[in-house]
Length: 131
Length: 279
Image 1: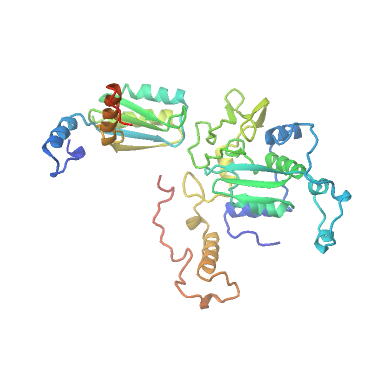
Image 2: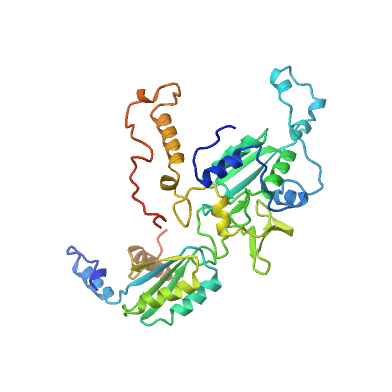
């Protein structure tokens, strides 16, 4: 998808291949920021209902402690009724208000620190740790 | 009538009201004195006050005009320890803001030391004076059960989004919302120690009531926008700011003598932000 094309002409061939492999599954997300922090019960009720919307691939959430402050709805694409359905569900569960935005908000490919961590784990497993 | 605060909105009116020592703060709840002592956790209820010096009557004081002029407070007379009480006020329309607390305190009580930070206000004074002040403050309209926190430590949370019931975030979970009664219940004391018996603070104020009682200008969620709705208050603030930062703390200097941009205040101000704010 052109929107999420992050490659530049100055990448090594390896990196370009890697980018192309990963870019295949980058899907857009809808971020829901409720104006108040949700309890786990309300949050999960909202998330369960969001799962019934068509074209939703998966849902992530985060927040302080056991509360839910952000919800990310990953979708395969947008149908004419997708946003309307999500808005209706949010109106019903979040009477105190919320903000919606479309973009990519969570990690969709490995970062440098992921590679480093992976490498560290592998070396630790193999007993090859420099001290 | 002293001029406590400028402005024509009900926010400014509230500020003047709270700062005026002749105005009696409205009592919203009645927490027993014993519960206040347990909440403060400086001493056990019924325990005697510890002292750091003998009562003033037994002491020989140096000859001093000020000492003769100013009568000591109860706590000072008895030689009590200095103890503290700290409040956290939520940004979401708490009845009062940290900066206005010392204005109120200093107009109402003697023998206190107030410290203000962005989200919290600490007050230090002699122990028995503190208990009296705490009782007055916690019972009054300056404390809301949900938007004001009594927090000796781990005060963080004034700017965090509220939870579903409109409660301010508290990392130590000193209080909880009782869904069956709709009341706020303190299960831990100010510094996070467990309470043997929970203390009920009563029901939180409804949203529209909070917006009426608050002393907070806030261009969001139905609050009063200072630049647009109360230009007089904003003009006075910018005037004070200008004279202070560029005038260099010289109140005797005329305004015309201070160099720089004179075109300040709301009349020439372009408001870029929409009503309701950007969030």
